[in-house]
Length: 231
Image 1 (tube, one colour):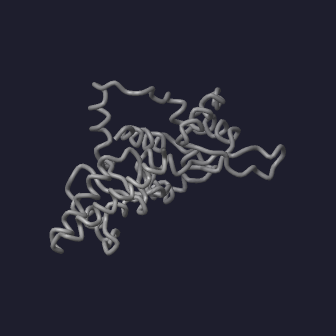
Image 2 (cartoon, rainbow, N blue to C red):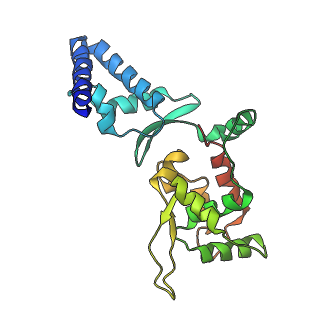
Image 3 (tube, rainbow, N blue to C red):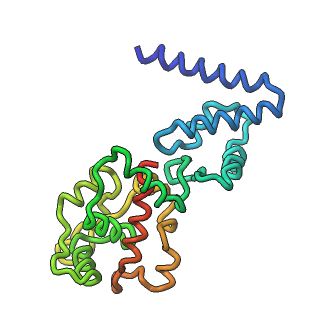
């Protein structure tokens, strides 16, 4: 039963491409851009260029169209972003607080606890890092007596795909480290780790070192980023 469906999808794709080919050049360009906008708007996750090209003709300059869409988003509350897994529309970071306030009246999924935000923040900024290093950093920088890192917190991040196991440290016991994943970047609308809030400022201040405390500014930054969850 799967084979007829594949043939049908290929026929539909060929028909879409044929429709474009019949249009005058100017109209063909506009239609191609609108198709991309519609597909990207409807997508629940980033789409790579191989997927996007399915609805366009073979002579279409996909990258040029994507750049045009990015420019057309200037001045709007959302933008077109290229992530490690593909292209996606996202709300602009400047409106994270606005989205957070609006979502307080909606039914939302389970939120992260303050401790979970702290742990995810440390992993994001200091990866690869072990559970022991995370706990030590929480104790030192937050002046807490119980800087534990519960296994259920780590498991939750692993289950949703935000973190993965990194390389083992070449120290006693060879402890496992943790790193963020492309899914983490996608979920929070980041093109790379260098797009983490206040990254450049923290580097310049010398705070991005496990020898120094990470401070409330980093947690506040990730808390703002979390406000964009569910864009």
